[in-house]
Structures are given as C-alpha cells and as structure tokens.
Amino acid sequence: MHRNKHAQDVAERFRELVELAGDSLANTHYDELALLIEAAIDTSLVEQLEITAKQLENLAHDMRNNAEFFE
Image (cartoon, rainbow, N blue to C red):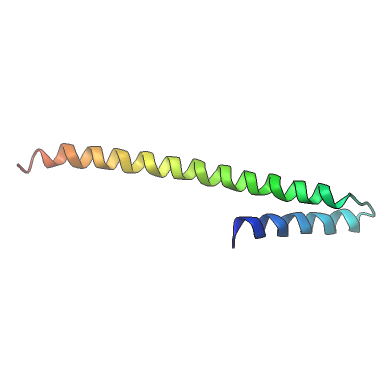
C-alpha cells in the first residue's frame, strides 16, 4: 500500500473513532494528521534504509578483506 494512501486510511479510521465518541474535528486537522503519519512512515523507512546501507558497507568491507586471501 502506498504511504500516502495508508496515512489517509489511518487518519480516516481515527476520524471514525472520534465521531463514534461523539466528538468532531475540522477536516484540516485530519489532513494534518495524515501528513504527520506519512512523515512518520517516511522517517521509519529512511532509518531502515540507513541500517541496510551500513550492513552493505560492512559486507563490502569484509569481502574486500577476504579477497586478499584468494590472491
């Protein structure tokens, strides 16, 4: 699922919960909530990509070191 759509779905579910409780918020607040959720998803993805990049960097380093033994 695309991040934007997922964020909107989460914000819409939150709207449903708020309305079930008998409350309401302006539509702009739900739009802002969707943006915050999307930003949180993006941050999480970037952090995971940085971890993966570091793992690849370490693997490349190890491969270079190990290659010295095969020459």
